[in-house]
Image 1 (cartoon, protein in one colour):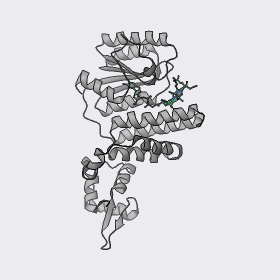
Image 2 (cartoon, helix red, strand yellow; image 1 turned 45 degrees about the vertical axis):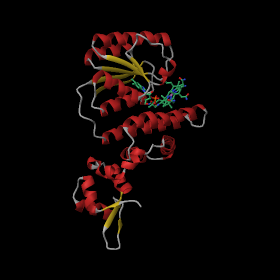
Image 3 (cartoon, helix red, strand yellow; image 1 turned 90 degrees about the vertical axis):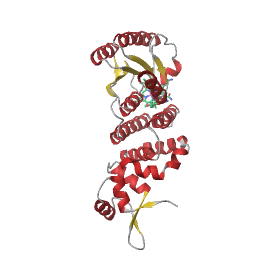
Length: 288
Ligand code: B12
């Protein structure tokens, strides 16, 4: 049977007075039902929806530790999550998408899996549908922009880890317009306590170089989805790598293009295919 909570418990979870909880329940903002004795009772999903919709952080995730210890043990069904997310991207509002991502997080989906197994997979399907002409260009653009906005808002709701004193510089090379992969790396690093300098897409090599000289980052991240001219790309990353080495920075390259372009020995410190491997790399090199 689904557990329910009293007004007092909900007030504790949300870090507010019990009277506020009762007021929100009576106004319909927070879903609740009354027992035959007239006591208000709250369901977990309604509390989570309220916390997401009105930006009330759940204190220490008390609700979760009680309720979802078992959920964490279960394997998340990424295929199912992807299908729900796709539907929301095509038909749902910005708020619905954000609520869905946040509720997944509250029920145990970590940030690494969110990017590697939910966003990555979902966008891959969008790309396949676009290629098969099942999705128009504008639908592809609209869903990419919806997920981008939702992810920015989602991170605004998370409590990042303590600052680790390290800085990362993130950019995409010239003529690279796939921003979401770079934003994913940036968001995950920030969430893990990094200070990030986000230089965005289509950054000329000379700007990568002057950016590295100016900010002296500990880590330089380049995301490449499409490489049109392999020779030009190789000479560009060589120049970036030389500058990074001179500034004492590590230089890593990741993104969809890496799958088909592994011949970059001597051009970077590492080629990285996922957020999980990025975090392994930062643990190994910086112990964070
Ligand atoms: C959205 C999208 C676009 C949008 C991007 C908008 C935006 N704001 O980002 C727009 C419309 C601009 C676009 C344009 C094009 N696109 Co496009 N696009 C996509 C799509 C659907 C999703 C990409 C995405 O956001 N993925 C989500 C991220 C999170 O996943 P990811 O890239 O795998 O990244 C993960 C890892 O690789 C890693 N990672 C990524 N970067 C880095 C960096 C570091 C340092 C580290 C450690 C890790 C890391 O972390 C991420 C999380 O796991 C892909 C489909 C696909 N399979 O990816 C096609 C896709 C990449 N596009 C494609 C094509 C062909 C194009 C165009 C050429 C189309 C055209 N004719 O104009 C142009 C090229 C533009 C350019 N020069 O950049 C093809 C590429 C085919 C190929 N073999 O190269 C794809 C695969 C679609 C397809 N199925 O055919 N695209």
